[in-house]
Length: 109
Image (cartoon, rainbow, N blue to C red):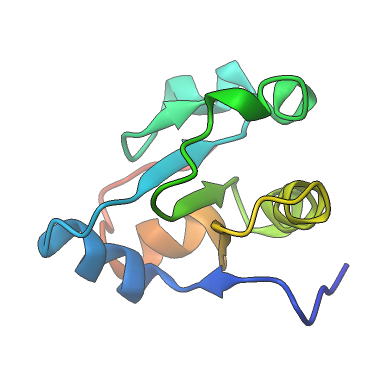
């Protein structure tokens, strides 16, 4: 599923934001069993709950949505953006890309 107008960032941008303390909120939308294996901090709101919990997402700085590979988070980013949130970004490649390029010791479920 490709959303050409969707905001998307890569893991290098996320790392820079983290390193430079640029305000952002990271939201893991994977299932609890996936998060138990590994996570990269941030909030945890499973994909099935995110639309009902939109009000928990900050609106004053970027929110980065991630899943395992980036496809579920792309769908969630599109849905949240369609509901009027303009600060939502998909993490391209998800936690798998983070593990491959930023933290090779991170095990991904």
